[in-house]
Image (cartoon, rainbow, N blue to C red; front, side, top):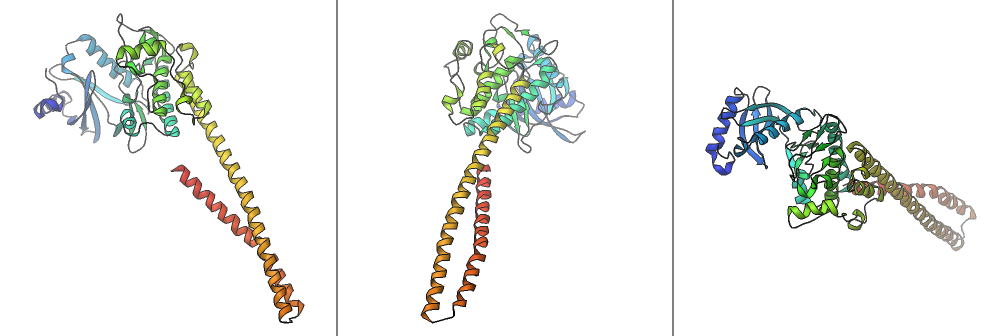
Length: 384
């Protein structure tokens, strides 16, 4: 079997399109290559019967004769199909080409991996980090409740839909189906590391027993990277990453980002604890703690802004009153001078006094309106 990526020529893609078309009775039409990973390649396609865009993931041909790889590939499809959640990429069908190449048809997400956005921006705004992290936590919660451990949570496996901003978890290629929520899984293979070294939980790094708190750790690493623009550990090779996750404590978030809310940084730091028992009990608890910390931080920031505006209003109204008092005194003095200079009746002074008195609330009202308009414009700029 040959490599079917574009690097091997369009003829390979044409042959693949024919094979998939035959295997699906013409209901899936391959259009273009999207990307590949360690075990599979993904293609954009059309499903004419339902007039929709889909994606097709195909096991790498060189792995098609390895029963273990085939089993994992099929388990990935089962794991994703078993998690019908808005935050998990949907699987529509599975099949096998005439040459024995397994594939499955899934939802096509028009967007980009979180990994690409991080490469482009370095780090993300706090509210976006909270939105993405809690969305992935919700998807993991759903998967964990169905006995599915992802075991490879990282930015490359989080998709951000362009049109809606929806966050989706994908690539369940290393997922493990346990018997139920809270069930621990022992990794197979002596010394075999399952997952991406830079996002591994300590228990994964040591090839030990893992449960849903392992996915929580990997999600906390992802959140740490989004907040700081760097990983908590940086090593020259995979072995060093593994050692650091197992043995070292990551730099405190507040040391790298002093402006972060304390409560929020504590949530992420707790998710990165070495001992699973020191972390949150579940991905759901982790997500809820992050939401609460973010909401608390937003409320405090709003109160500080409101207090600052209130104090500013007080100062500016006092200043406006003082300026007006000076101007009113000047008007009355000028009126007195005119009356005395031109020997006018003293009764001319009374209309001037009433004019000054009536104009005072009008002037303060105009000042207040200007201050409110200025506050709204500042709020709009802050939200951009």
